[in-house]
Image (cartoon, rainbow, N blue to C red):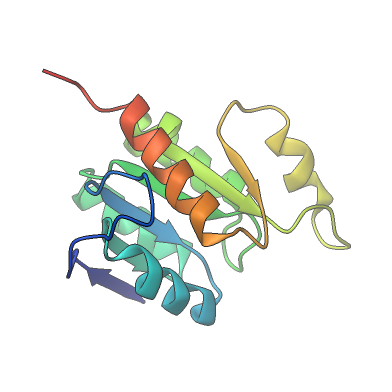
Length: 147
């Protein structure tokens, strides 16, 4: 399922993060997506997707994302599979992917090992909202042309 929310209100002065940019968030945890929607929509135009296969279909049609935040462990496709699919259809977005992981676990530790082979930003869950906001802004700013 895909959810989209544009910035509804200007972000207050409690953060040094500059508003702006379009962010795709891929995570199978619906409660987490709802939390992201509430807390990030004031800063970013947020598109939320709970099924990574739908996210890939979306990227095939629409590559206009400043940042992609992707869970590592999901049903149907893990973060490594999402990365591989993006590499084929929109390689210019690869450096804009932030991976979120709960760390090593009993299922699919090879995905955690795979994370050591890429240079993308990686956040350990649970991620504080302030850290997520700042990381999204940092990746956005690193890949935005100025001037």
